[in-house]
Image (cartoon, rainbow, N blue to C red; front, side, top):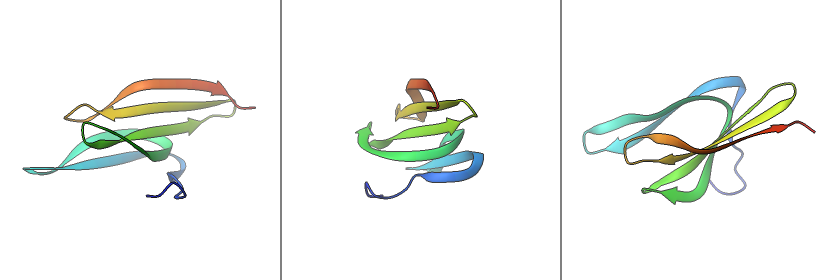
Length: 83
């Protein structure tokens, strides 16, 4: 993906599955609900960071994920009102 590529988006909130290639084959490293999944340029533990975005009628929720060597885990999140 380049910086101009749009995020992976669902019609509403959908469950995204991310698989990682391991010595024993592909393994599920993330299963998470979101409206958008954005692959970031930054890397952690050899894998790109991921940003998940969801919206409600009044708020935007953003969750930032890093790879911990086995799977993606949350390292930061924020909740903002829609302006």
